[in-house]
Amino acid sequence: MSLVLLPDLGDLLRMHPQLNAGTLAEALRCLGLREVLWASGPDPDHPLRDALPAAGFGLEDLPLSDPAPAAAEHEQLVGFLNQYPQGRERLRAAGRAEAEFTAVLTAPLTLPGVLAPEMEEAVTRYHAAVRDALGEGPGTRWRERRLGEVAQGLAGRSGAVLAPLDDLFALRDRVPGAALPDLTGFAPGETSRRRALADRAWQLREEDDLEALLSALDREEGDAVTPEAELLAAGAGLCLAVGDLDAARTRLERAAHALRGDEPRSLPGLVLARLGQVRDAQGDRELAERTYRAVLALSYAPAVARETAGAGLQDPFRIEV
Image (cartoon, rainbow, N blue to C red; front, side, top):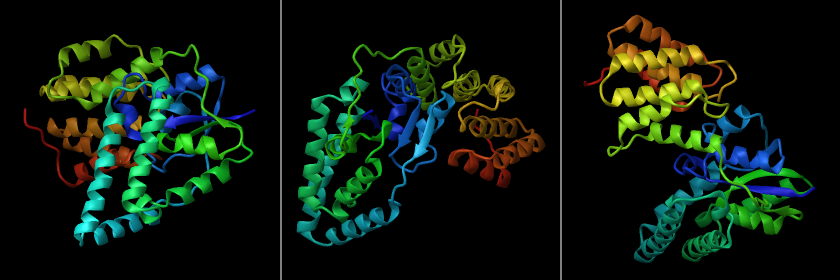
């Protein structure tokens, strides 16, 4: 059996309606794969760290080197180059390549689209431009060395592996038996659509029609990747945006009661942290403090939830309505 390489976009998965955490869960089901080898970054709050286990997929972390030393060396190089005119020009060239590639990644994307030859060409151009500007090594955060380590770790493995999109094509060429997935006939389904709706509600832009978004959330029943509790919590955020604390609290308390224990692991912390803030804003300080402490007592809560709870215990949360 070959090694199937799936693309990871990190937090950008929250931005694309047709390429999000739900989309990748559906693609894995389409491919008949249940276990995923994680060869992406170490971010514990990565959206797929929530979605894939909640959807019943097993995750196995590929042993990877700590990226912090390479990142520190890169920052040292940037500081050195900034001291000289020629160095600053090199940094500008690398910055232009970064901006061009970012524009590609933030345009509307689909799963077949990120696996297409056009994306491979964009990735190749990006890495070549950065390497030409800053050199291989600290300038590229030791990309070649890192790719070699990942390829070595994947040697002899089979099944599905999740890797950063900009590493995907290089790994395909370095790992015997590795291939991009055959997604003939695949199209995003209800899991992807529901995930996209929740992601959109959490982002909340100034031009949004809040009433339409809230109505759309209320029509959904939820699923393993985007359960009812998350839909309620996302709706509470919309209520807060218009200053309706009573409606926000009602939704968050319903969300807290809807937590089953098998939902995406970030969700309890996010729900309780926001519920603590709403209770605080309504002057229910004692109950708010208990809610914040419940966040900190969880075996896992995302960094933003822990920071919110810690700040709430220090100073009461207030909101202008």
